[in-house]
Length: 228
Image (cartoon, rainbow, N blue to C red; front, side):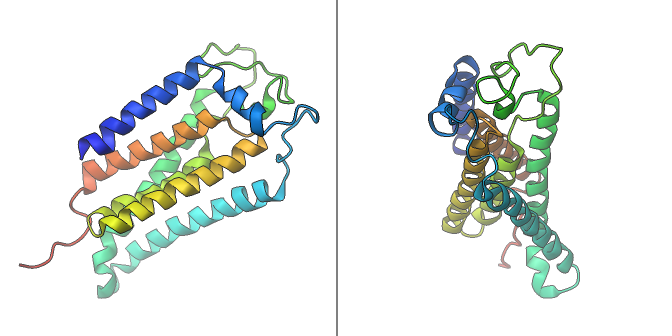
């Protein structure tokens, strides 16, 4: 369990983080598919599908799931039929909120620019590698990790909710959470709001945050044990 949930993802995370921090993969990937050099901009920056559909509607969708989890937890105190869902609902609500909040806090303190603010992508600021020495005279930036991608990846919480109850359903939930995060990442990268590494970091930060919450406070205790 530790190897598959922590060690292997940890190795993948460190490898990818080091690769993107020491190369120019981020701008190269963005130029290859999202940025139009002839127009000097990201064509999808103001596109309806990237802004209203994936960004705004996606945000509302995840908020609705989180609030529904909170509602199920509250309902468990008033209806006996909901009692078995008390801990799973609490975990889902806390895990979604904690994953998103952790990324949001990191986004405010890391001081990393959005692609659309950079020279070569329609902006004026210099490109600085992740964790590179960013000039002190530049305005504060808040674009790393990707917060919107994190809201999609936060739905991986339902993998932990289901793994004690139905393993097959748990892996479906994991796949759906990854798909949601990847879809939100695609939209944000197409707009020029983030580089690929920003969203990869979001995925791993959310995963390890939720894993820590589950292992530390909820593991093997989410669902009532059947009477013997």
